[in-house]
Length: 204
Image (cartoon, rainbow, N blue to C red):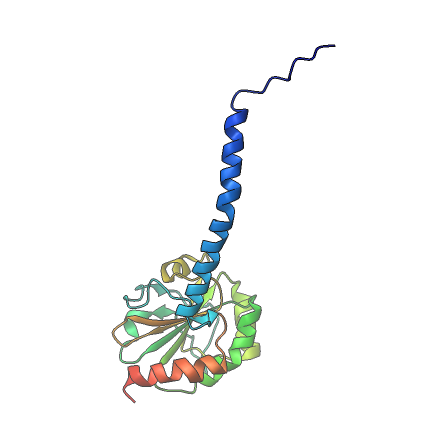
């Protein structure tokens, strides 16, 4: 029987300090991640619907989206697609939605109420949806939009920096994005943030 100590593989000794270093650094990494989350929550007032957008303060993407096929407005005429360049004169709310989105159903009554306010345009971007499902959704829950543009592949949503649906952007008369709501609009968000902002942008 041999009493020779087992030989260590090359590099085995070097791996141990690396492993110890990672174990020491892990708590620091976790702390920094939590600290970043904490400060971002402070910056948004603890409201996840107010996640900052890189596009706030910049011109809205000058997209032109085709209409939702077969969708008709209150008068029976086909509802147009979206071309923001043609929506000047008023602030505009751009709502990104889809029929398969549960929170969009929760938000829809709020949009229907907002549609009665004549101080701004309300348009919708239908995101990665089937046209028949989108029409059925609006037929069931109501049509709040003055225009609906379809974004079947999500390319326009990428230009707008959309995280997910629903999201709503507030665009000033000059085409500048001034606010972004992430998630469904609520009565609290509308009364506390959106309507005061619209009053300031529309001058009344």
